[in-house]
Length: 280
Image (cartoon, rainbow, N blue to C red):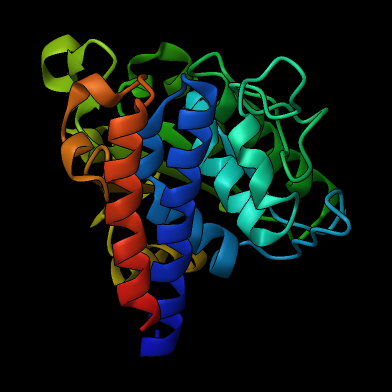
């Protein structure tokens, strides 16, 4: 990608991170850590990769699909959708409010641009492979993407879905794993290690690449490899939980906790300074 494309994606990712902080602060709840680690993935997906997206026609039948299997990271997805124009960016601050359409987990019945309601970990990937199988059955040129957490892949249903994808030769299915190393109870390596993730995924019939998930050149390489593969594809993204906010980075306590006013101000100062630098 050229320098201008990369800069545009970096700006989009920074704005997505700002939206994540705005929404979780407004809610006084939510999951900033894993949303921030995946912000670069969301930026690449929504501003470069997904085909057929139209904020004026969210249900366009020819569009690619995305399922957020780690549904608690809705603040990141909502921020990307708002930045893309599916709904006002200002609405992010209403996250989890009683009268808000932006619930704590994605709801396809209330939020434009959401392709599947998710929340129970392990289930989103199953819906996504079903969509990919349906597109194949109907002869549609549609790719289906899903994002899982590295803690989430401790769920057995995830591996059943992978077997289904491989058995049905779903080369239109691209699974990303946000490998930030931390889950709600601590380090994944201590709670229930799934490593070596790449070898296990390959054993289940996927092509696979391991990348720095906070690097746009590597994300571009990964999606390019997916498009050339004749198998279902896995992108294992090594990321930093809480990426972009200094005191949240690699801190398990920020898995599911909102910033207070002082913490919010620090985060916004850092992110706005980064945005100003990128836009200069």
